[in-house]
Image (cartoon, rainbow, N blue to C red; front, side, top):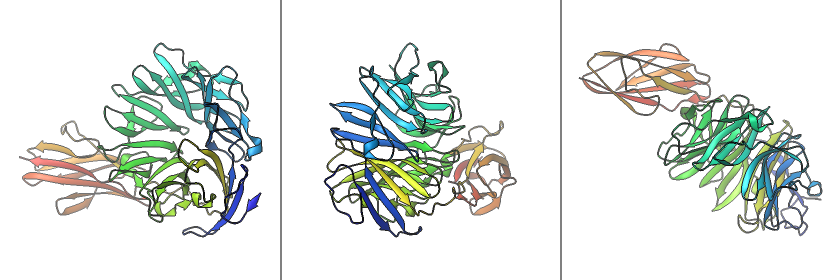
Length: 445
């Protein structure tokens, strides 16, 4: 049933409709459906399409893979008969992706709407566990666990033989949490701090961390956007990127005074996740900008204390957000589905460009990003590099003097150096905004 006021309902099946008027969008109708099955101690929805939600429900202290079709009554416990537990992390509507457990060890698995599954766990010495977290087309993303820890991986088909390791050489840990048709996003830990990372099918990756001293993570992605969080001022802030560290955008909501936030899903235009408001996590969605956050927690009955959004899907008219909410703490989640209509969804934003300074053979020591130092005896030095995204111009500043580089995707300029230390700053500009500046320090002897 549907009720147009915020009241607590005793039934496990509820629908709550309300109207929200929040800039920059017009009024939306939001309906909340409680998917928590009777007898379960906990349930979580991790992903959604327009017709299906997946996650897990806990019965007798065992997580059981769960599928819904928009209603509580549609709940299916699809835990395989030969599995001690299971979980579903992603769905195409026809196939579901996650893991089936053998004793305490997860085994990557693909389901097809029922209890039967295709095992994808690689039969390789030293690999003890595996999980599929995401999919795009015929590629599945995730990780394996070895005696050395987490190892990023993809599968290019529905067999264990299609397993491809992506773990960077020398890294302490890595994992894939999201993929698109050509790229994979997740984390790399090089021995201390978790960094958001982007792969293109091989073990080499791009480090997306905007602050090398603090953690960041890619949780979701479309073909043109990565989303997750980056640490800003000691707190996790919802973040989006467009393939480079310099394209980082802070989406920690300003319109609801959030202390921290986290994105778990994106389709390039909409982002879903959680913002901490008044000390409590609130499920919500963004429309690509930090002040566009819509607080979906506000449409829950008043006795729910915390909530989070994990999956988002839209046909342009109706938007489905999968997640969970709790009346007490994180050990008592109840799966929820928010259905939003009359939402004006913007087109995918033009990505913020990124800029890279590349070293010349005659000028070693210039780093790919961040601060670099170089010593030379020359009065002039050629500086060159590249820029990504939609770029209209690349500018540079040397002391108080500035100029425009020649070229965009590939650019260069001649730096005139004064004796002593010269600070050179390079920035790429485009309709999506300005890149994070790259600084190069050149000392002329």
